[in-house]
Image (cartoon, rainbow, N blue to C red; front, side, top):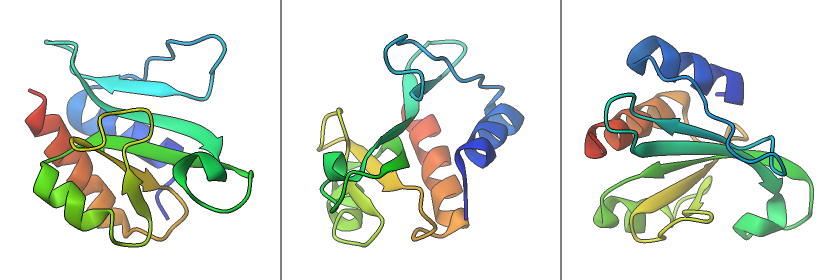
Length: 118
């Protein structure tokens, strides 16, 4: 199961990205962005389950990534995915980091988001 720390290590190792914690009132949200153009390619957050359409109010980790609208439309029909939380739902996807989505798929989607936002 990919965790928040696994993702932060992956983006640092592969893209030299350091997480940016931009909001004092939301210390669990970390922006992932390009060093050169400063565009966001991801954001990792901890939110209550009901904020992403799941039952309950337990706090969970999620990862928002950019993607092609067709890909997002397909993925949100699968377990472990939902439309981008707090982002444009046509262009952003939320992954629930609970082990439902395969590790390799998460890393592949990070790579796609990074490339799309270059």
